[in-house]
Length: 431
Ligand SMILES: [Zn+2]
Ligand SMILES: [Zn+2]
Image (cartoon, rainbow, N blue to C red; front, side):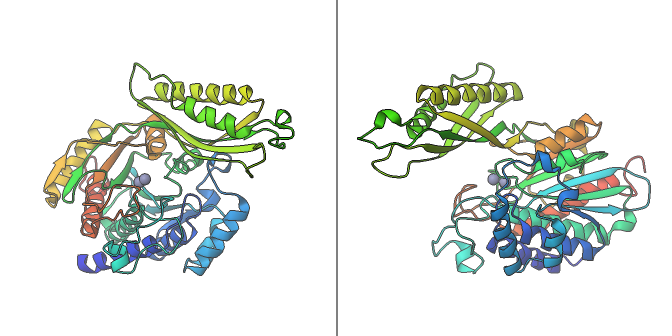
């Protein structure tokens, strides 16, 4: 393998994804270019609704918005052929069947960006080196551009070494990780079913370049939801008693949501991130929309805070004579890595000798919907692990000035390829 050439390719791929970021369920440019490349490498591909259970999809934009995103993806250099094959659902599952008996190993890579504006600061490297986001209010501020590039780099290495592999390797390119919107629908479609091993990886997450963590722990269980309050508009002075104030209902709900009592079994979070209401100064507001999320350290705590939140919403709606409708827009659960798999990963990564420090575990500090895939694989008798590839970062995750250290891309690929070889190589135990 010509690692210098691969590094150049990966940096260029990553910068391309970075320049044209796409939010959850709109990753048509990103996924179509991934599909084109995977297909050219010789992978068998499933795409679009063949990788996504449509009734399980959460938090997807309207069909009219999807039309605009598809048009933009085509204008910005996406593969028109593959975008059409996606049939409006960006998701890709690539399979390498070796033809030799052996385990099924699945790897998941997320592709979406964050809904945040990229920094305009001159010293921000994507500005200096001209790969900053050209899509308004969207930026790769979590490193999923790097994940997609690492997935494609890993695909290239594994295909080059396929004669020394056994069983089946699946590379899953997932839309909508942010807001925990995509993995559940892919899991429900069965993309990880039959996997003996499942691997996922995140860049950064508080670890510097040169550090690799074998087992990311403590993903918070979460539910994301939109609440729409409907009241009745009226003249603010002439007939206020005829109005039903949706703004006040939503505002009261927002305050009370943040006052849900804590749980004695562990930590929980509530956040009302968006509140929009009203149309004019002298009009009783008839409609309000809230975007909120709840999280808990365990599924039981997360269920508790979500259920309390629903009661708060209903109570506030009733208090102001309005109605409230709640739509779940995302969900993530918790999952822990399997010790035997984590041990094998540790052995493979240590043997590589390219990381200055290997940590047994790292704290996740947020939510992650690959946990649905991990749980599914574990329920069906397989093993799963979630790793962290350390990277120096220019600003915290989800901040507009976020940027990764591109020097960790190749070590990321080397680690994944070594782990797959340890699990599925001709010399792996049980071969
Ligand atoms: Zn992320
Ligand atoms: Zn993120």
